View 1 (cartoon, rainbow over the protein chains, first blue to last red):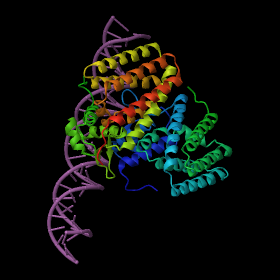
View 2 (view 1 turned 60 degrees about the vertical axis):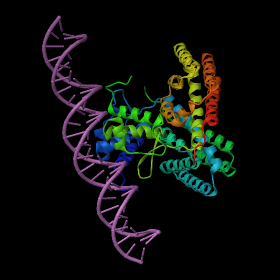
View 3 (view 1 turned 45 degrees about the vertical axis):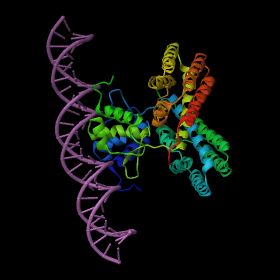
View 4 (view 1 turned 90 degrees about the vertical axis):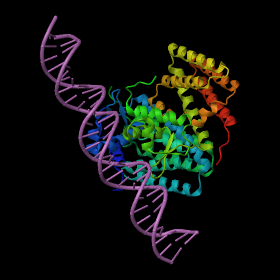
Length: 220
Length: 220
DNA sequence: CGGAGCGATTTTGTATACAATAGAAGTGCA
DNA sequence: TGCACTTCTATTGTATACAAAATCGCTCCG
């Protein structure tokens, strides 16, 4: 699954990212370059490259004195993340509606079938669900053909706390995602930009409220 | 003006950025790390840090084989940049309207006075105009209090071609910016989010069309 | 000619040593 | 005790040497 000849900086990026996303890192905890270099098995130089990328995704933050910490977002900041993501993904959906072709439509349908399969396991297979969901949204982004948008989006997805909350979603909540995706596909098939945009906005905002209802309040 | 004790990576960032923004770099031309290290007078290590930042601002791009080039944006990509910027700055303006205080309002008025002074020189002082404009928008962004938004915006401003086109704007076009800013200040004073959002959207889109009308078509 | 292969050159990637700086922990004095 | 000052330590920043990879240009064969 992982290319053994991957550059060290890429290895570091993926290992550190996984380390944070899977919740092995406590929000607010300090990350030294040396520690990260141990985790990823490469020297500090490629680690620093990886950290720059993670800083841009805001998974790690820097103190005034340049020390590194695992990001810890307030409720308000998670809200803002969803709001921005809704704006930009809706825009991406509108662009994609104009540009989509039959081949891509077919791919979207297949991915959503996989997503439904994951939901219909007992219990639902959350990891596969998240994976299919990511591929669905990535494909739309690619189809939007906007390099700039593609550059911005990574900073708006994959909050650890959001991923973890997904494990507590009910089958009904998970299934609503599949239904949203089906309607998106319908909008794409009709090449209706406004429809696609509206559905995507609703989709993200519904996800946000599912998250808000499910997530436990964090201590101060 | 420049802190002599600035870290080397920051020096490199500023020097390379200026090199590109002032049009000394031809779009599409290759930039080797060694060349950049000569330009900025530091070793390749901090240059690589600086390049990562510039890559995120999309002022430089990487080929498939990791070689660096000065970014060269198609007309469609400049359109998209303005569209995204309009969306995000409008959102920032709405947030700022909710959060603004008298002190910040006063600062905005002062900056806009400086901007008007620059416009009313004969000929207009474009450098001062751009500088005041940047500070005006930066202050709104800061007032929006959204770290994520602040992280995204740098990728959407300061296209070299846009800066250069500004030198050909008429006094009427330049003055319209000052008028827009006055209306933004009025919206902020009223703490009217929707008003602020609309004015900002119009402001950015007007700037886009001024740019489109003025910019000369580039050869293929 | 054309283009396949190969060697030389350019360019990026990585490790490591050392420098600079920030933070922590004492130490001594009022 | 409180708190300035001063080591000492932890951490990031920078330069440099070398490794790996990509590109260029040459030669040779068809």
